[in-house]
Amino acid sequence: MPLPIGTWTANVAGGVGPLVITKADPSVTGTLFGKSLIGVWDETAQKLSFCINDPSVNLKELYTGFLFQDQFRMPGIIGGTVFTLAGPLTNILARPENRSWYAQIGLQ
Image (tube, rainbow, N blue to C red):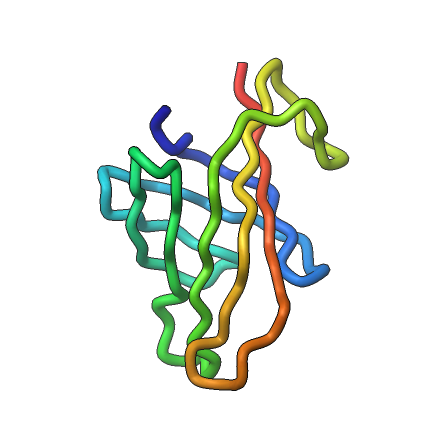
């Protein structure tokens, strides 16, 4: 299934805000919490990998998320079908931490 384009609700290490995917073919562009992102969508693995593409962000974090259809939804997610991206968040310049993120979007 293709990566849904649109505004997702993301939870990144406890902070909630918008993940906006504007293109995924297989290069991915958009924003996370208003910061530009750049990444790649692997259709076969149903895997999104991206990093924040903003020179003001000191931390270089790699987000990896796997797409699946979900029966559970975060508060505020509407639509008949809910999709979730979930996976690890890795700071590639520092000691590895156990952090994760997820995002959801509801589609009709």
